[in-house]
Each structure stands twice: as C-alpha cells, then as structure tokens.
Image 1 (cartoon, helix red, strand yellow):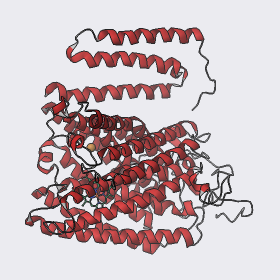
Image 2: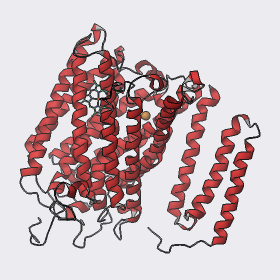
Image 3: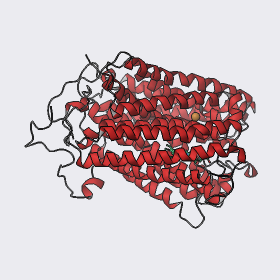
Image 4: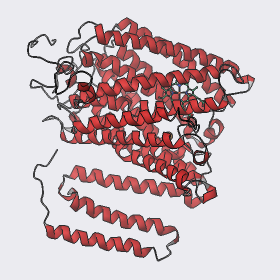
Length: 536
Length: 94
Ligand code: HEM
Ligand SMILES: [Cu+2]
C-alpha cells in the first residue's frame, strides 16, 4: 500500500511545518530524520573533497619523481585525506546518518532519547570539521604527520598539528554524545513488546557501536590533549628527550583507534544484515549469532590494539599476545560472513541495486578481512608493515567495506527517506563501474606492497611504476563511477517516481509506515513481530 | 526496561558515603609517601576504583537499577582493568 490512503491529513517530515522556516527549519531541527539528512549532506561533501585529494595523490604517484607536487605537499595531502576520511566521514558515517534515521524507526520509537543533544552533536561535528579544514590553510602549513599523529614527530613538527588535533578532539565529543544518545534510546525507547531479541539486527549493530563510541573515544581525546600539552608546555609524556615514551603514544592512540575501526565496520555489517534477508526474502540465518557477535566484536575489539605496533619496539610477550587476540577477533567477523551467505542459500534472490552493493561489500570485505590476518600474524606483518600493502588492506576494509555499505544503505533506504525512487539500471551500472575501479585502484597496491613499496612516500623506484600506473587508472574509473552514482541518486531523490511504502517487500518496521515517514514516525498502531525477519 | 519507581536515598546514607569517599581521598594522598615501586599505579587505580564504586552505586543510584544495567557498568570496569593489564604486558617485559 502507498501513502495515498490518508493523503489529506498526512504530512511527511519533509513537509512538516515547525517553529522555523527554510534553512532554519533544518539546522535547528530536533527531528532525528532531519538531523540524519544534515549529517548526510555534510559527510557526502567531505567525502568528495577527500576523494579528490586521494585522486591528486594518485596523479602524483603515476610516475616516479616529482610529478605534480612537492614532497611536503604530498605529506600534507595524505594527512588531510586521512583526517577527513577517518574522523569526518567513516567514523560518524553510517551511525550518524542511517543510525539516526532508522534506529528509532526500527525499534518503534518516535525519536531518539535526547533530540536536542542530537542536534547539538551535529553542531559540534560541523564546528570540529570546520576547524580540521581550517588547519590546512594556516600559515604554518597543513599538518604532515599522517592521521595517526605519531609522537615524537608530532610534538616537534612546525606544521598546524595543534589545530588538527583540537579538531579531532572536538569531533570525538560529537561521537561520544551520539553514542550515548543511541545507548539510552535502545534501552529506554523500544516500543512496548519489543524485547532486545525482537530488535532487527541493524539496531543491534548500532547499539554495539554506541558502546565503543562512548568508551573508546575519551581515550583518544585525552591522548590528543596530552600531545597538545607536550607541545605547548613541554611536559614530557612522549618525547624521550623530555623523559617520555613514544610507544606510550602509540598504545593510547590505538587503544582508541582499533576499536574505532569497529565503529566504522559494525554499522556496515548491520546494514548488510538488513539488506540480505530482504532481497532473498528469507529469514536471516542465525539471528542470535549475528546479534551477539556484534557485541563480541565490540568487546574483544578493545583488546587487540597492539597489532598496529609490532615493529614499534614493544616487548616480545606483548607481540605474541596481541597476535593471538587478533586471530580470536576474526572469528565473530567470519561468523557474520557465513550467516549472510547461509541466508542467501536457497533464497529467491532479487538483484536490485541495494543487493548488488551488498554483494560487492561482502566480496571486498572478505579480501580486506583475509589480508588482515596476514597483518595480524607478527612474522608476515614485519615484512609488509608500512608498505602499500597496508594502504590496500585498509581501503578494502574501510572503503570497500564501510563505503560500499554506505552506498548499499542509501540505495536501500532512499525511497523511504525521500519518498522517491532512483533509476535502478543506472544504479547497477554505477555499482559495477565502482567495483571495477575499486579493484583496479587497490589490488595492485597489495602486489607492490609485498615487493616493498613504502607507504606515505611521494616518490618510488622505477620497478613499481606499472603497479602505480594501473592503480591511478583505477582511481579515475572509481571517481567516475562515484559521480555517476551521485547524479543518479540526486535525480532520484528530487524528481524520481513516487516510492510506495514498501518497495522491496521488506518486513522490518520502517516498511510499515508511509514513505517518507511523518514527523513522529508512527501515526497508526503497528505490530511488533517476535522475529523481525519473518518471510514466508 | 526502565524502572519507574525513582528511588530517594536518605541524607544519612549520602553523608556516610561522603565520609567514606573523603577517607579514600586521604588514602590516595597518604600512600604516595610509601615507595610501592611498580605497584604505584595498581594501588592508585584500586583506590580510585573503590571510590568509583561508591559514587556510581549511591550517588548515581546504580544500586537501585535493574540487573542488566549493573552488569553492563560492571563490565566497563573489567574492560578497563584488562586494557591496563595488557598494556603492562609490554611495559613489564621490555
Ligand atoms: C577515490 C577514493 C580514494 C583514493 C583515490 C585514495 C587514495 C589514497 C592514497 C593515494 C593514499 C596515500 C597512500 C600513501 O602514500 O601512504 C591514501 C591514504 C589513506 N586513505 Fe585513501 N583514497 C580514497 C578513498 C579513501 C576512503 C573512502 C577512506 C576512508 C574511508 C580513505 C582513507 C585513507 C587513510 C586513512 C589513509 C592513510 C593516511 C595516512 O597515511 O595518514 N581513503 N588514500
Ligand atoms: Cu587494529
């Protein structure tokens, strides 16, 4: 059924007339759906800026020697690219956009627990982002430490490290508040009759993520403050000359930043877990295993940070211990992959764009995940540490994983969010172009990485040229696919044909309400199912 | 889910907790006069942990919350202890 039924009184959240008009009705909105869109517009803008910076780096690397920029410019570029992509795109990414929009709806609530705090988080996010971008244009020059801000270099370099770390610190606050908000929402706002194990699996993923956001982010906050204190007042936390320990910085940084990769990937897994059952019209395989493996990943993910530090001079015992734990944390991730594939088995598969993106996700995530095991084992790690093998690995996980999950999510939920449909054929073409571009861009980096191409270098030996050349061509294809997808989505959201309430025959709660939803989501009584995925 | 009966703690109880907290604050300061070598951090964290327990249970009413929430908060302490412990696998064997 569509929203034709009660057309006369029905007002969607997009048309709802609140206290403010025009732009103000957005930037002061407390409706979780409007805030979600605010996040999405900001994040999409940063993503395209970041991607273009990435492409610039690729052009520099197309041939050995100085091609289009100086070494110091390249150092600035990979730092800015990394800071934007990590702190402003993928960490907020799925949870701030789709978590905001769909977490309340999927658990049958009319909003998050603290709507104003939600708006406040967005403002902090914007403030932090402006500061991060500003750090690029100051007189002292863009920071050149990489997004990891490793001490002691970061305590001594003359570039704008303080502004950039302050920005990351502020962005962290936004993340903490969002996490807190979602935790309370899941605990307190579930519709009557919806127990924890009646929730769909995307809310489960957001819930596990929120715990990480709340508990891990303060640690990086303190670490960055310590770094600033060391720079401003010469307190010796990290610089050996002042009696500090540089490895301590790496410990503190990765105690946050490893869990942070789960902030990125858990919601992505949640999205895929929603899409797979819908497009196979099958009950999700192993509901409890998926729900609990989210929590397991969140928990054990806190204890493996040392796998980033095998070559940093950490003790021998710490190294084998972290290696062991890293292999353990791979298990719950693998459980999810098996569950998605088992869900597809014997399902009536429908290759619509969201499902195609989900398949691309699973493929790329498996490559990213298995190369992660190569990095998790101490011996092989030492061979490929700080080479472009790492760059390939984390792009497969974050871009191939989280990025493609974001694309899957927007193709899945856009009809609900805007009440319109996009062109399916173009969306599928965009997916295929990006998939080809992506693999052409990053796969060669595994190869030259194993051969010894170092990471974060603007120059290289001639023997790596073929790999770099292929990689740059892939980058161009990928960017082309990105814009093709973006244009198709914008056209669909603005002028596409009207979407019915349930275009995919989904079974979760968001498909029981009109597209786009009303201000308070549920105007009519709705049914909470014991199993959210009861197909057939 | 939520427990709707909001609990009101007596002033007497709150006063007693305050005294306990003050006692441990003095303890934090006075242990610094002993040289505990590598256990300095452990002792400081233990005392802070005990204080945290009292603040959470009484001032923040965790004691009257449902079991799930209490377990979750307890797990945070366990997690924190594990993180510190694992960090010292590096520092103690270097
Ligand atoms: C069109 C898309 C992209 C291109 C062409 C691209 C390209 C690059 C290049 C050339 C580097 C520098 C490698 C080096 O010299 O070590 C890099 C680093 C990096 N990229 Fe990307 N990238 C893209 C998208 C992304 C996305 C979507 C993310 C995250 C979600 C991301 C996260 C990072 C990070 C964290 C670094 C490391 C920065 C550092 O070394 O400090 N990139 N990328
Ligand atoms: Cu890690």
